Image (cartoon, rainbow over all chains, first blue to last red; front, side, top):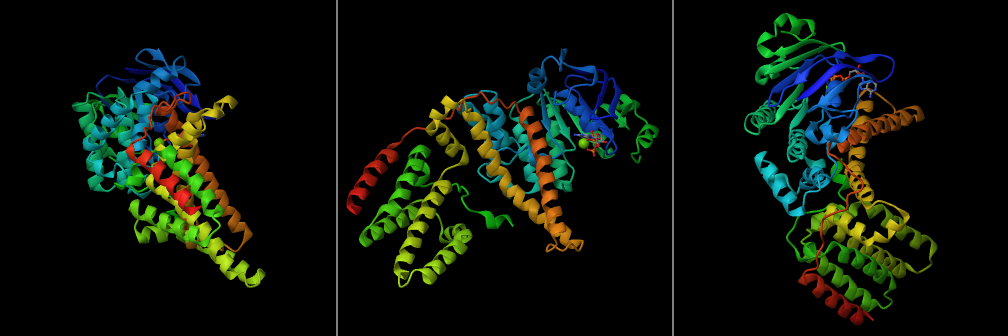
Length: 232
Length: 238
Ligand SMILES: Nc1ncnc2c1ncn2[C@@H]1O[C@H](COP(=O)(O)OP(=O)(O)OP(=O)(O)O)[C@@H](O)[C@H]1O
Ligand SMILES: [Mg+2]
């Protein structure tokens, strides 16, 4: 479980997160929704200790992220909004292997895991391709592969379908759903599209740095979404 | 845009040259590089050229790929040739030979990057530069730095082009210093943005500079064969 307690955060003078108290339950599919600039990415970066609270605290499996960043990082994978920037190596299979190298997995196992992950995402034909030559949808899949291969317990997907066409969108969303249902991975999906609420068990609604709703999806009302500036 | 920056890109082919050990290929590049300038006799140069040609064939590089890769050097060649024509009276033949040697050198380094993945090149650099450890330079850092550079230099060119186009679309005049400055600043800013995103991504994927590269390079029969073959070649040329 990931838990925030009175989490407040500011980059400079202004608070970007104010008194956030939420929980991400194990095995759940939690969607964070809010308008541009509401603080979604900033909140999620606290889950894997890329950011630590200015006030309050964040716990990943009961360990404070301020005390043990590595614990948070190895448990919470992150697929970034700007996935273009998250590819480190130029060749697809090498990039997917990057995180596995860092986990100090043996080379033979790395190759096996990379093959398996690429096949799962149906991009095994891209294994030897140069990342720069890929389409946006393909790059996104490679970015996913790099994180999925590491088998984290939780994965944050930061607006994973922005800029993709319908077909790619559906593909990515069905992969994420599958990871949750079959892979038993806890999913944190960040979005500003109401349609993406479809798969959620739990929803966190952010507006101007504050959580205005947190709970089961069934309890979420159109009024709250409207208040958050999302057209219902 | 990117198509213009194809120099030195790896292509996955099933060839003997591809299967050679990255370390030995790097050493060969140095040896051949010296050779291409050290050979004195014309017949030596001819044999060497034939040898380089056979390397190209062996590596399964197509003619169009070769040309595309050599395109960026076209200006340098023309420039060098022009210099010879202008400044060295009646030494045109010498000029052509000189440029030819230069061309061989470029093709040889091209063959290295064409047949070796960056990953393997980096492992080779790591292994061959182990002595650097004395200066407490961490091989893993070098490795990742090289990869990141290889990955993001083309990205920079693409961004440069895109920014230039979007500026032109809004009627910027790129002869004006002010607009050139703006272009450079915008691209730099984007690259800094990428660097900060990249640093987040590295941390998220548990980057650790103290790791030793576990990739093992091993000699195979072709590596040993190639050593014998190249020694014979050197003897023939001299
Ligand atoms: N590195 C930073 N330094 C200063 N301010 C920042 C930084 N990153 C984000 N902010 C500010 O924090 C606020 C929330 O940003 P955040 O990226 O979390 O929003 P978001 O909900 O993810 O938006 P979007 O949907 O556009 O991705 C914004 O006002 C933004 O300007
Ligand atoms: Mg965001």
